[in-house]
Amino acid sequence: MTLGIILLVNGLAWILFILVFRIVHKRTVRPKKLLMEIESELDSLLVEMNGTTDRNIRLIEESIRRLKDEVSKADKRIRILQGEIQKRDDSSRTDYLHLARHKPLSIEVIEEPVKKSAEPSSSTGNEGKDAVQTKTDTSRENTGGAGIKEEILELKRKGIDAKIIAGKVGRPLGEVELIISLSEKTDR
Image (cartoon, rainbow, N blue to C red; front, side, top):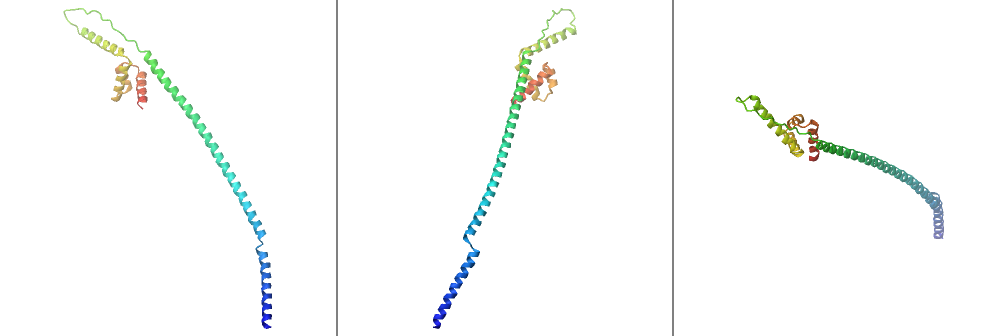
């Protein structure tokens, strides 16, 4: 009998323990409520992530748009500069061609017959030298622009100033400077 009472008390204790545990468990765990809280947290997290993603996408699109604007501005500047360079090259070529077409006229000296006298005068010897010098200048001009160009460039390579070169070859300073600058451009 005592065994029956012990078993009955033990069974009631277990039933009481199970009931209390279920009540406590339902109050603390509540799976439906827990699932709803998890869902709401996930929803708010997704909304926040979508907002951040949209903001980042807008920033990237704005950066791309600004870069495209800068590239188009740079392209316009490049086209303008190329046009200016082309104009400058064309004008320098036309200036050079203009100078080549308008060569200075060569002056020919007509020699007067030399009178033979008993005493040779010193002035007669000088006149012969002047005639020889004039013929040399005339022959230099008749050789064309290629020979003068080479002579100018050779003198420039020796380090002679453009003014001195112009005096030596008998050409205007502007023409000498133009030949030198065009030669430097083609050497690059």
